[in-house]
Length: 89
Image (cartoon, rainbow, N blue to C red; front, side, top):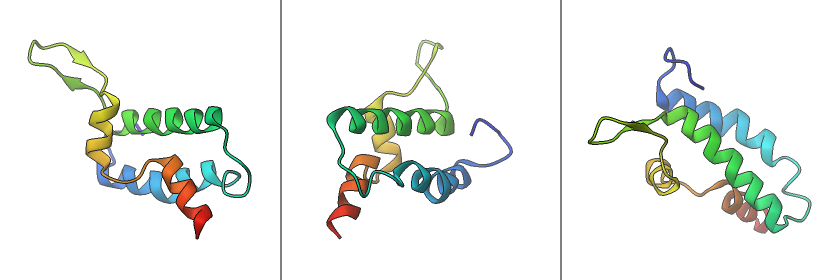
């Protein structure tokens, strides 16, 4: 996911079509505890941070993207909401 050969849209498609289904495979049938939800969100944010990379502040220092920045960038439901919506259907 850190490769510069693939662009961000390709990496997001790989995440959506390969990584996310593997991660949520067991979650759709079983119960999700708060701890499981927390681990799923942490995993998803870790992947997204690798895809989007760090951001440079006005003072020139590099930092990782904050959670709200990642949510603004993807503009889709997070992984826990996705699992819960699949369960309802």
